[in-house]
View (cartoon, protein in one colour):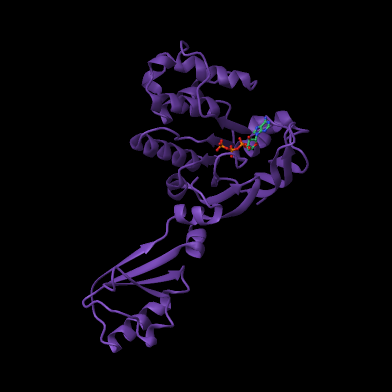
Length: 308
Ligand SMILES: Nc1ncnc2c1ncn2[C@@H]1O[C@H](COP(=O)(O)OP(=O)(O)OP(=O)(O)O)[C@@H](O)[C@H]1O
């Protein structure tokens, strides 16, 4: 199946000479959830803004469902819903009017039944006659999504959907995103919360300094780059490692009371059985063991050198 968004050698240099994007190639498949991770200033918003037709690209090409975002702006914009970080509409307007108005802005005929189903899906139906200022922060965020969905887009961009919200609300937003995906909407989100990408994304793209450092299926990424650690609490402290253990990536920790074995992804797993056998042969016993797998956050820090 052809990708729903196809980005080819995209660059962007702003008027002041700043190179915000330095050649991005990326295909986004229909129906997937792609999380774009990157530190401040990485170029995420610039990239999204170009796909949405809000910022002109430098060189390169962006196609949405087979249409060029510059030449066919109307066609591509109609397919896209953009959920910004903040609500900028009239706080004295009702939920119903705000969402209905968004549909009109895109030149679509009124469809009260559709607006009703969007508001119900987002648990906003009871609040349809309330003004925006009467809503909680979480409800306001859901209104942003409802607005972006009102013209029935096939692709939804969420810019930092859970920035500054509490844990419960974050989980609630994740459920909303999951339901949208079940309805066939392709979702691209930017986030500073690695946990968010870890939780809901199918694929993760890491952007830094205007370049896409990698884009990979989340599970494959964690398998490939995730480091694992096995820690053995020794029954008797060791002063040095016996030569027979030199083959393994081992360190003595905590004054010789613990042995730490580091290995990468799947490849190192076979070594554990032989390590344990060697320990037994050396008469080295342990009273407890624990394992730890590096998270997407660790992987990200290793790639980018700082936190998202
Ligand atoms: N209109 C502009 N003129 C000049 N430089 C800009 C403009 N907009 C953005 N930039 C610069 O381009 C770079 C990328 O910005 P962008 O907003 O795309 O990053 P981001 O990854 O979305 O960051 P954040 O996570 O902080 O939102 C930044 O260094 C920013 O200062």
